[in-house]
Image (cartoon, rainbow, N blue to C red; front, top):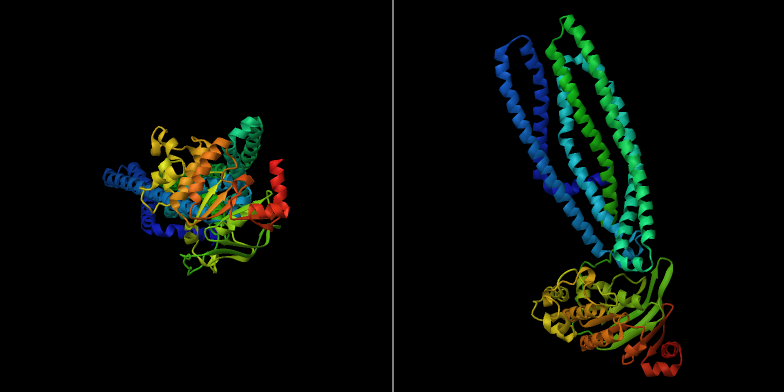
Amino acid sequence: MLPEIKKLIAELKPYKKRLSIVAVTGVTNAAATAYIAFLTKILFDALSSKNHAELVRQVPIVIGLGLLQAGARYYHIYNMNVVAESVVASIREKLQSKFMRLNLSFHNSYHTGSGGLISRILNDIKTIQDGLRVVADICLYPLLLIGLLINLFVIDWKLTFALMIIVPIIGMILKSIARSMRKYIPQEREVLEYMTSTIKESLDGVRIIQSFNLENDMAKRLHDDSEKYLHIRKTVYKRQEAGGPATEFIATAVIPLILLYNSYEIAAGRGTAGNFIGFAASLLGINAPIKKIQEAYVRIQEVVISIRRIFEIIDSKAEVPEVANPIPFPKDWKKITYKNVSFTYGKEMILKNVNLEINRGEVVALVGASGSGKSTIVNLLERFFDATSGEILIDGVNIHDMGLKDLRRNVALVTQDVFLFSDTIEKNIWAGDYSKGREGIQHMAKLANAHDFIMKTPKGYQSRVGDRGNLLSGGEKQRISIARAMFKDAPILILDEATSALDTASEIEVQKGIDHLMEGRTALVIAHRLSTIQKADKIVVMKSGEIVEVGTHQSLLSLQGEYHKFHNLQHS
């Protein structure tokens, strides 16, 4: 059995009860349908012989079977749809949960970006959902096929054996289709990822696209992807639909031959009109299960590919590992130590043997050119990814030995690119720590210098901020993110270029909030503007992944080294 099918069966296990109903109703439906087809022989024989009593006896049976068939089909389809929806909801939640646990290296290096991941959570899961609904017919149509074949053998076993030559032909058609589908479906999914990625980029970057007149370029990119997708889909449809006409032609061609055969049998006194009608009804009925089995066979190929793609993510090892028995975050810690820390991204060395001590309550500023490793130092502290070598200690306890949630509960992050949830202002501040009540939200907003502008919005704290906070200005978003960090009340604070994207007036307002936020906390501050970090207790100068200077503003100026160069550059 394919490993992908095993994974799907594991997902179906919690729904055994409903699946048993699907199986029972499928068997009932198949048996009723096959028996109705057989009863056509009895009815026509009774009609031909003018046996009114037999007709009176059989008609209620046919009506009863029809009612049973309709009820069984309803519960069969209803329960399978419920199972399909439940399974894909479970897989979707697992996939989304996995996205949240994968480290930043995975997210930063995924070839089609977040758009590609969205494609997997939408398109591939939709394929599984549609496939489950069709594959459910396996509980019905193979049994119906067997029932109709039994009819054929009972009515005329010699003719049925003669017709069995068709079976290998249909099998060869299905095998050929499956082989070609396995080749094209992965290509189709790959192109679909690129299309989703292009559409997401078009929405995320609409301001830049319009500013640089890139509308036509983005439209062409999507058009090219769409053309590739359409070309592959044409090939898939061509292969997928090829089996239908072939089997239908075989069935259509066989009926006249059966009619000719039966005319000889009736003339010789060995057959009846009922035999012909019953045989023809069963044979024509076989066409539907063959088509459904063929469709299910094709769908299985699509489902297998989609399961493989989804579980590539779910089974990915690109998570930050957690220890089985974590050590609690030290309550009265005194020092953070980076000890011989190096980090490699791909083949590039980002940090090289970094050693740094940060005392509790200190404000430590990280400065240096872009790509010097400043952000990597703070990202390693929150374990967005792990160091390639060396260790980070808090009072001698390696952060790897702490619970990930416990570690991150003690660190608050304020970044240049503020992310707000598409919700209310209150909910975005409360997101700092949902375990607390809402009572302190307004107080934190006041400390973050945000309360006044919040109260000017139409609904105050219940005003929605829009997608990523696009209904607010940059300074307003930043002050809400500061209020969120304050509400979290973590002892360690990371400020990653928190004011670099703001105008002077906004920066002044935001800086007031930052000053309140930094009170009594250990702060790691990344800043390009040296004017904002002159009062830092310790300034760490980075160059090419290494620490080249450490000191206060005045002591570093007196060295006339890298920091002195930065200072002169900015003041010139």
